[in-house]
Amino acid sequence: MFREWLPAVSGMVFLGLGVGVISIYGFFVEPLAREFGVGVAVINLGPVALLLIPGIVSPFIGKLVDRLPIRAIILFGVTLAMAALLLTSRAPTLPLVGAGFTLFVFGAIFYGPVVVNGLMVKLYPGREARALAIAAIGISFAAAVLPPATGVLLANFHWRAALAILAGVLLLILWCVALLGVPGGVVGAVAASDEQGGMGIYREPAFWLIGGCMALGLNTAVVMAVCYPPHFVAEGYSLADAGWFLALSGMAGLFGKLSVAWIGDRVRAHARWLAVGILVALLVGYGLLLQTEGRAQVLAAMVLLGYSGGAFLPMHPFLNSRYFDASIIGQVTGAQMPLFLPLGIVGAPLAGFVFDRTGSYDLVLVGICGILAVAACLALCLPAARD
Image 1: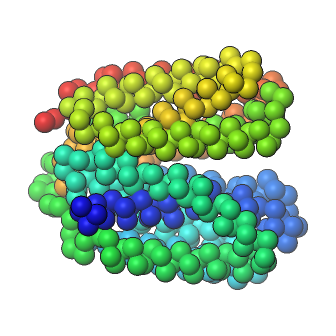
Image 2: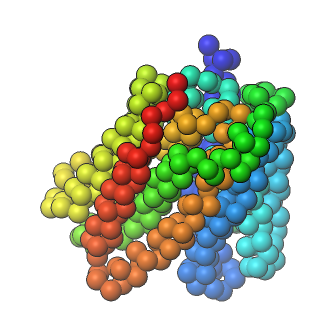
């Protein structure tokens, strides 16, 4: 039983120690700003690479997933990403630090969501929801484990040594997991024709409906991840309170992913309705957060947002698996990633602009509710899923 699900557990590790590493970015902001004599705002420009590079590169990575051994792709990405962190730990200037971080992001794409989710869909036909949810749980675990581990390292070492130690340990873990848990050959069938894959995917309405729906839904989470702490402070809570609210939301998100693992495959013929239900739950959660008048109501809103947000995370590859053949799933998911760029790039700065003008994030929450309503309508427009 465990051996059967070992690739899914491996996917959990890859997402946790790839995408999940971003949870520790903030720990290095102050040390870098202090050493290089720049403002925190300059260091905070780094995460822009997290949106731009995947949006540009993912379509090409998706094609590789459908044509090459996925283990080789992952090993290349792991080696490049961790070598980039090691080089960053030795960089003498801030531009070189930025170049090293950009190289890390590029490497992490090769063992990120497009690759891992493609592997799950190809290996677990008929059980995609369970496999995708198991892999997505890795991000939740990483958010619980990596920050305290990084805090301990920075409390005992200079940031350069701490980053080098982190890179070495992650390299060893990820290499072992890739060799033990990922099949060595090409996984699944290669796309039979350009009509099935290639430019043919752009002629499918489901490609645009799923891509647009997911881009809107997932990017609202990105925007609010930046807005939550100042929103709670503006509402009269302390940063410690905000930390507890977010921790509770994170735990609820874990149960949301487990719920998708439990029911997703049972309702796979009605995947679009599952997506609509989750989006409506998110909309209700943000509406509750907008109307909260006490701590108990905030906690209720954050539990609902965390649960539904966690459940929504695996829906992108799951919906794609219901409308496209597994042999081209990497191409489809990768080709949809540029759709994430517009809102992803302007969302957080625009939310900050609104806060500067109004002193609150109330209008941002109203806007997010509207965006989620549009996302739900796009999901409703999907045709019936294939058998």
